[in-house]
Length: 405
Image (cartoon, rainbow, N blue to C red):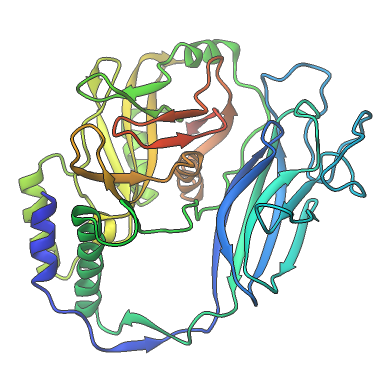
């Protein structure tokens, strides 16, 4: 299937006309900072002239012991914190550092703007030496404004050139993964590897005890046809199939093709009709002993050969107050890597899988198709694991439960 993509891509010429762009660019990222984790590596490299705007809000870990205060990015009032990463700041407040080793932390609190004057790398943390200082953590939004972007870009000036460029870029990314060109065995289409969507607005009202019990009984991970455990189950949607499909369509999710031959034909026909091909097939995975009921994806047109947001979803074997329940596993493809099962080329996922969980929720919320959204930490959470192809991933272990309109 991938070779067909390459043949299609390299048969088209690259654009030669470009349009001027602004000298500065801005990107938004969302991260989770936990009380149990000393530092969170954002994956963001910073250059002199960059501006970083950081804001944070708290979330509560429902499984934490009662009596433990909730985390607060402005800090918490507590005793026993004799040694702090930033001694002059309040315990538990949000801090950052700009180098992995030897860097003095910088106070952020609930909000701060940082001006970068040297090459740096952004880490987020909590001003604490005690993992049990508070319960929960922070949802941190980072806006990176690059001040040294080139004044021109390689954006094609016509629709036909845009399609050719998308195919060409996808082919280059594919070839790097297929034949090992470049400096590593994986080629990332988003080297900063973080979610670029805002965190969803969630309810602090605990889930009903009965629904919590049903979610606790769900399998935590999906598996492939060889029963290798893979992606984690990271979201639950409550609503009818009709409402589910309508909501996902409104949120710009596309049903994936299920047949490789049909997919190749669709890609060719859409390209020559000046459309975008947005429904590339995804592999079959299993939950509840059966393959996914639906696969959905969201991506840049055609370049989704290398990079796409996507998830698989299964109808749960139970209902909730008369409504169907859907169980999903979402990941963000960021390039190609070698499949450790067979040495073939496969997609590489962003190891910070919570970003795709939040992307699904945020997209539905933005489309105004949700009633409420609630994070839930199950009794046996997945926090560090590997998918079926051997790539590692990490999570705070929480699922997001989405109730549709």
